[in-house]
Image (cartoon, rainbow, N blue to C red; front, side, top):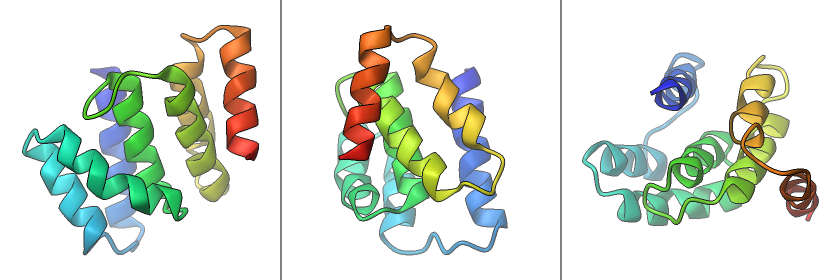
Length: 118
């Protein structure tokens, strides 16, 4: 439940910050809300790969919860790290980076950092 709250806060932040969520991101989030997690992942992943911090956060959450994708804390932390780097000035950085990392081994954290750099 705590992770969902963090996810909801980030989405709310996106809406309140004036960021446009119309279009593919909105469609992906609506699909997620409808419970079609696999379809949501297919819609949000291309946005995340293009650098959309809010889509990166959503994909990170999906990996951490195993919704629409296989649960993978390394991938979750990588996406959260990329989103945090994009949102450096928002104050969300510690929340995004700490959520799945607390459940990972040192080796997984190192792999996350390598993947984020790539």
